[in-house]
Image (cartoon, rainbow, N blue to C red; front, side, top):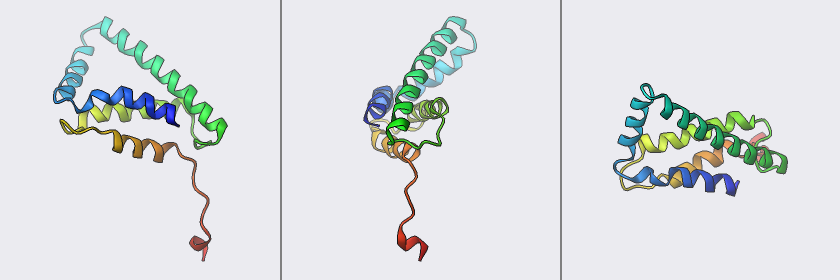
Length: 119
């Protein structure tokens, strides 16, 4: 799980930059008109998705990640969460705590019901 959080931290590191959301919006605007840019974005996303999926698979095998998750689908969702940090982070405020809470809640295996929950 720590390796996944490290990757996501690195990917979201610049989200607190005041110009980050504007740059992401501009990238999205240009993607429709630039085939080379589309190719770069697709290659980068593919590499990131595959790497995260591998880490998630290891976590599933090791018991630290919910075994009901599909590793590739989970990796896709995690990348979407990183994108959201750029669109929604407050300038000057690091989204890392919120990112960690979201990721840990999503990936963690379900907890067994406590005795008092049945009583």
